[in-house]
Length: 71
Image 1 (cartoon, rainbow, N blue to C red):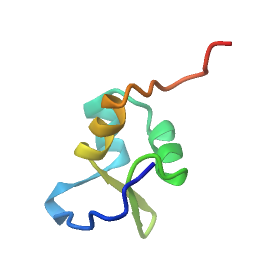
Image 2: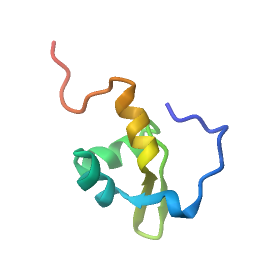
Image 3: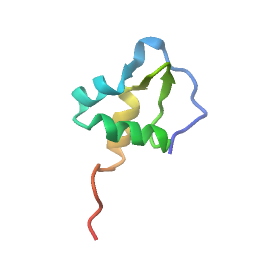
C-alpha cells in the first residue's frame, strides 16, 4: 500500500502512466489499476494520471508481479 506520510514530491519527478509504461515495462492499464487501488502513489491532473518512477520501482522491488496469480 501507499505510504501517505511522505508528501514531498517535486513536479519534475512526475511522469505520466504512459511514460512509466514505456520505461518500466508494465502496461498503462495495469499501472492505472495500481494507482486506483493505492498500491502505488499517483495523482490525476485533468484527464492525465501521473506517478513517479520511484513509486513504480518500489512496487516492483517488493516482489509484486503483474498478471494472474497461479493457483
